[in-house]
Length: 376
Image 1 (tube, rainbow, N blue to C red):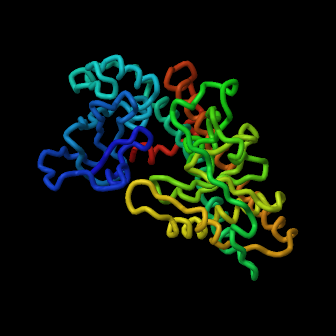
Image 2: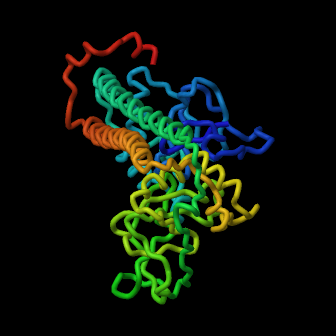
């Protein structure tokens, strides 16, 4: 069974939803042959339209509209780029019917009457080839980021020391503050800054602006440049124990009761502590130590204090390890940034080429393999 993703086109439904969602009886489902086209009647304006490029037949939910390609005058790969473009998404939205957002639908009768301008076939092929070249570069950058991240995790997990130490022996752990909705204020003029659970995103990313809360006790812990923030409570057990560095905007802020402030006894050990707590192996220990089988899971401060990490006695050895981790992390971040820049380039380039405002010179055809084009 297939679904249509606005990002990835036609994909297996279990990949999209993370589980089987189809009923046992598929008699009402629609056949989606290899290279056939399909769109989601109620989500087409978000990009849920694509060609089945998986090279295998499948079925889709009755909510989808299935189409077959009949033209011999155009390149289906070009038309797929066109129909998934930002400009066409706006056209779908304008032609959809219904009053409820995200439930407005575009029936086949209305879709089939939409008119588009198509350049000559040679120009279509040039555009497809150029965009494919950019896609290859994006894939290469994504792969570099993914492999570097895996290498970093591996290097972290093979870290060893003859002297493992408990977290509680190298840092203090303090719980965050609790408040009610009425205590939240719109600006720093009326409250104390707080880093909330909503600011701590998966992947070690802190985003958004601080919240501001009134009535916090003066005894509540505050973040310093050496603090490490750890998630204490979460509905996703894999996120319990996830750690975060403190951005400059949050220095002096408190944290919520869903988080801990882990403060190294030696401030210079902050980075080493962060990396040791970020190790996949350590994260697995936290997951196993967390309590709660349903709903919110929780790691008790005492259990976190007792968990052990490699801790060489020589502070210079710890600093040297940090340099390796930071270099790998920087390489991963650079690859991700490069991939994101290429995606922006692709989007802007495709918009210009689809608009017809820029033509690719005919001598570009020297780079094309027409045997491959015919096979497509």
